[in-house]
Image (tube, each protein chain N blue to C red):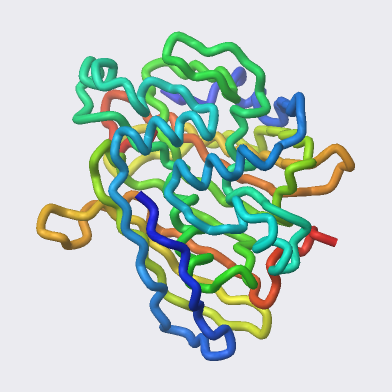
Length: 155
Length: 170
């Protein structure tokens, strides 16, 4: 389930190295995975077919790794608002995430320039006690352009 | 035994090109936003998007990098109907390494996207546990009908020797 889109965003002029990005958490249920499979035209059975993944010895359908990238972009845009543009996003995959698990996306500002900032990011599966569990994507990093709703190729 | 055979080395430079049969459309971005749970009105509210300086609604940034929508390929036995290099490396399993996306501008509904994939390098490494692994690096460039560069995607796929494997990612 999505949360309402924010109406108040970070003050770009006040951003500083070390600032945390407000985290984004989302439980990825099987219906969400079916919806994502449809939205991306990716109908691989690993992402929704419980009998098929059981045959493979997996604990459940596998969350598509590209979901992590989509959530990281959402987290950054929800924080910085529509006058920002995620120009670069890099992520390394670490561990599988399965249907029904909760993902936690976090980030910290590592560089601030006049028109952009760099953020170190991480995606983890949330453990049963609420702590960070195994890493889903780490390291990860984004460069976000500030003061513009679109990228350098917009013309 | 080395995984980096002459046949595998010959993969470097291999290219595949997929052009969408129609414009991207506004519904694709709105649907992706709903599916992922991203309520950003840039994907659904043209008045809001225009107030921010855009021509109209756009799509969530990573959607353009989901190549399946352009590929027009039949589904295989596992239901997959998208881009693949059809690599069959015996006695290995495939692991996703990572992606590095560069977004040059937001997608517009009228964009007709072409995805051009190219294998940039094939190399062999050894895991910490001593297993051989083959690292296949490829890039995709996404352009539109006017040859405008929309996005780039550098992807790493790893084939890990089955005998002594490490972690896995689909």
